[in-house]
Image (cartoon, rainbow, N blue to C red):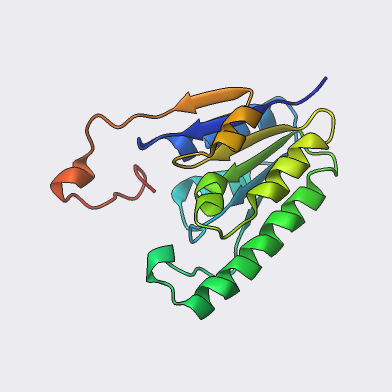
Length: 173
């Protein structure tokens, strides 16, 4: 059975949360899960739970670079090298018996040029037979949208952040 590609996108809260939910569901069904996170520092609360589940492997970049728009050219190049290593390591590992590969914030990482969209698209074309893949992030390209079998858009109608409220541990991260 061919695994399908899921795309969770939009400006609303819930993209990562939905991918975590699918990871838990897949692990509960006995599937091995590889959960890879880009552009975040690896401290989000949901990762604590995922790390505790048998059969779920979590990978994040060992160094957090902060926001892309705050990086100088040298920092961006180092970040791109580290995130490319994370991506290629995950794509290589995905063929080793995983049933689900989650690439959290991969869409955003592609948009800013920190990882290669072409590498993702090439991988989709030759992915292991039963591997289900999830991508999250804002503003997916036409090519990523065309490659997806599922597209779920989270649309923000209201968010406390708009009124200056900070992100809350256990709710937003």
